Image 1 (cartoon, rainbow, N blue to C red):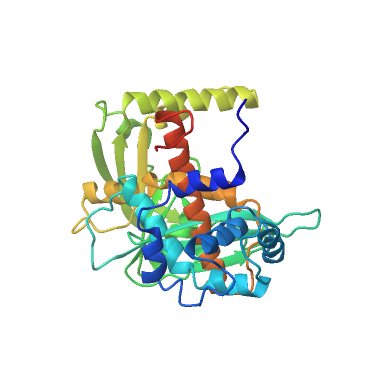
Image 2 (image 1 turned 90 degrees about the vertical axis):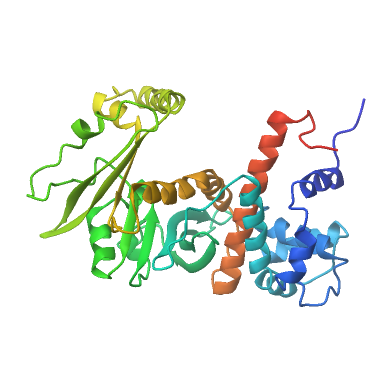
Length: 367
């Protein structure tokens, strides 16, 4: 009987998932400006970084594990410096893996800076481990992290909101349903910027130009063909302020609709509640609200930009599960960003491994 794969075997499998030019990127991204010293090569540096970032170990615990495994004999301070110098390396690796997945950005609008925002919780290990919420912003399409913030998870001003982020004129902030609130959209509008969000039909009330209620359900029912698209001019109300914008809708494919409704019914069954007909109907569409101008940003461009976010949605979900446990460098912005990119890279690797495991061989990789 064969013995199970050793740690070394597992590492070699993981290496096969890396972009082919990952060693070269270590040099061009200037991650190797520091001498190797107690590290043998780029591979041992990467093993050390992933042990900390993906394994959720503290820098000190990582240093101990590296020494016990005969990978490197380094201090936690040396590891921190390695992490700081690896920010761009991890980012470039993420972009390479996204390119492999066929993730292609929409046509760039040089007059508008596209920014994707999100947030997740981090629970550090141990009974007394701290619980933090990360708020971060990535510029599209290069995934450059332009903002990173930590808050408590409870209390005023700690929830996911556009107000967590500094906004500049001509930014376009792209968010999921959690950011679909009138107050957040009005905040962006007050800064001379644009918003693009997936509509939460329970929290975002829509109005016509005459300030009458906009009947979204009736409108979207006119889209009967798969991938049919339409847009309508609407307004939202935040306090006494009305913000003009557009509802942009695309009908999902039949397979996607069936899967979405199946999930809703399963969730309703778990909660022992009845699935509402309106919820089931809304599940057949991707519904977006945007304040982007029609000139220069037609319906197709709006859908394409959000599709770019959707294409990496699985990566963000994986990131959130991976970030849920770990030691986050809290007092240094560069280290925190590098840690975030490391988590993104790990999420992409997991997605790639799962794909290979399902479609290639019992071992999950190609010789």
